[in-house]
Length: 490
Image (cartoon, rainbow, N blue to C red; front, side, top):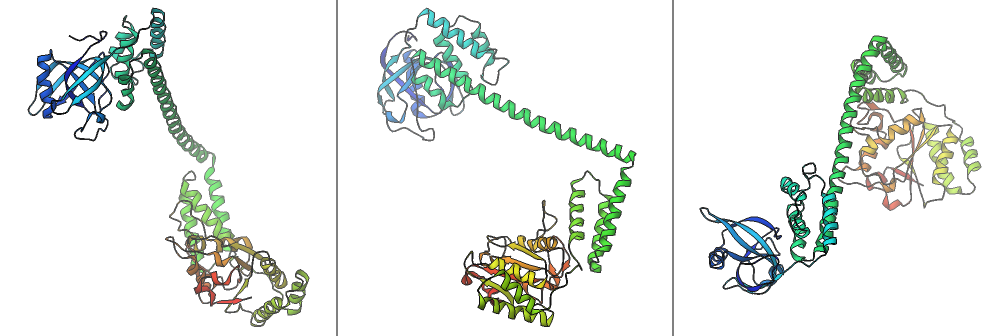
């Protein structure tokens, strides 16, 4: 008979296990089906049912090729209960003592071993370690999320079990990964295992505390949302009683007056009034109310008929360009020719003016001077890095956070239907899976198409034919080909 505190050597049959925590002073059930393991179990009956249990390193491997495939430390165990099943045997093992295996015969599945006993510690150390462990464990029944067998741990806390056994049982029942428990089999030294178990317990406590804090925050968030919903409903009811409907009606009436005063196209006005009717029926606390109000505000803020009286004197235009820019005679001459056609025909030329040159040469300031020369409002939108076609033609209102495109945003900023609109860095437009912004720009710039420009957010045609568009680019060759042949390059 082998004992946990007596040195021993010998040869015993071996069973190789997979992904199991084998720690002395505990019991484990193992299902045995492999022929070699069944033979070892049969041999153990002549050895007073003792054998060696080893753990293979690769838990996915179906068989081992030599001793190096297993961990160096195994455990001497005794089969205390065997139950025969249809195609395997269920065995309960008593785990007795750690052993180091020197030789392992794969033919006979027997191994030479030597026991690895725990080191001696003084009575004072024993008492201190036990006291610290009991304090760290606390009441296992209240902290059942740390141990698998809380009732057994509770019993041991109140018993006079040795620190060596206490650590072994705690480690075996600790709720950590099996691989993390293997250090308790490899290490016979009590002090080292004491620090292992303290570290693991504190780690579990930290994780549990973190989970509790997260759960508490989630619960608080849910409670706050429910509270907010309740208060909003109550506030709505109170506001109804206090005449909030009258305030809402006044808001709707103000919007109606703005829609009628905006002088929109008939179809657009009808759509706006229909949306206003829908807005008047939506609960003010509903997110849809904000979406609808934002859309209506955008509609009435867009310029539909307001325009500035432009200067029709080419000499004044020349004076303004000369005042703002010294030199650049050829450039200013080309620009004045372009402006002269615009003044003479009272229409925008079919080709769009495009100022090309390296950064810092004054393209933007030239465009601003043209606006001053013509007495027009000036607005600028940068196109650099745009890949999403929705940046040009807007998002559909069915999407959360939908916005109008940059063209209509610029028109709203200008406040008139005939500004000078600078589209900066047209050569930096690019396309990807979200669409081709360059193609969308054709609809903006083409005089035959921009009379009925369609923005996804607006959902109604918008007339851009009065806008004096100017483009800038750093490099001519980078301008999308579809746009290049429609431009007057300067």
